[in-house]
Image (cartoon, rainbow over all chains, first blue to last red; front, side, top):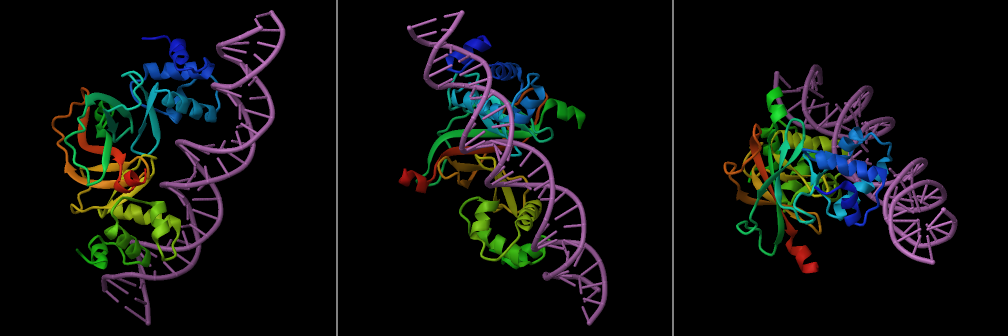
Length: 138
Length: 138
DNA sequence: CATTATAACGCAACCGGGTTGCGTTTGAAT
DNA sequence: ATTCAAACGCAACCCGGTTGCGTTATAATG
C-alpha cells in the first residue's frame, strides 16, 4: 500500500490538505462514497465545489472510478486494479441503504449480442439486493 | 398491440390528453425517453410536474420501467414483457449520444457470487459503446 | 531562502432533474 | 345531472452538480 502523498505525486496532483484527507477516506472505505458521504466524514474544513473538483481530478487520473447509484447520484471508489480507466468489475447495489459495493467478478464481453451496427466497448453489471446490515435489520 | 385507451383503463388510469400522448410516444419509441426527451416531443401543452407524476404512475403500474442513464438521469421504456415490475433484460448505453436501448438478452442470477451475508434479488447489465448513428457520425 | 508560475482553492451564482403542497379541473362511475 | 377522487397546474423548494473568477498555496527554480 503506497503512502497517500506518493500516490498524489505519482499522478501529478499537489499534496493539499483536502486531497490527502479525501484519498485517505477512500483507502479505508468498504463501499462507494458520494459527495455527501465524503462531506459527512471529512473533519477538515472544505468547500463543496473544491470537493467536486477533487473527485473529478481523482477520476481523471485513474485513482478512483465513478459509479452511478440507484438514485442517479455519483459514487466513487478506489481503483484497486491500478489506473485502468476501464474497470469492468461488477457492483452490488443495496436496495435498502442505497450502498454500492465493488465485487471482483469480471465479465466477458464476447457473448453479448448487440443490435446490428452497434459497437460494444465495455460492460457493467449491477447486482441488486440487500447488503449484510440491511438484511439483518429488515 | 392494444389500444392506448384500453391500456390505461386496464391499469386503472384515467384517459387524459397528456397520458394518451405520452403513452403513444412510448409505444413508438425505439429507445428510452427522459423527461426532457418527452417534453420536446409532446405537441400538447402540459405541466412539467404533471409529466413527472405521469411517469411515476406509469412505472408504478408496470407500463414503463425506469433506467438510470450514464448521466444519472431517469429514462423510461415501454414494458414489452407484460407488467413484471422486475425486468431483467440488458440495456445498451451509447457513450456518445447517451441514448439507452433495451436488449432482449436475459441473464441468469445463479452464477454470480456476492459477499457473505448479501442477498441478491435481480441483475442489471449495461453494455456501453456506440449506437449505429453515432458510430457512423464519428 | 526568495521568487515565481500555476494548480488548487473559495465563493457566488447558476443549472437541471426531481419533489411537495395545495387549490382547481375533469374523467368516469352513479 | 350529480358526485368524488384522480389528475392537473402552479409556486416554491431541494439537491447534485457546474461555471466563472479572483485569491491562496504548492512545489519547482535560481
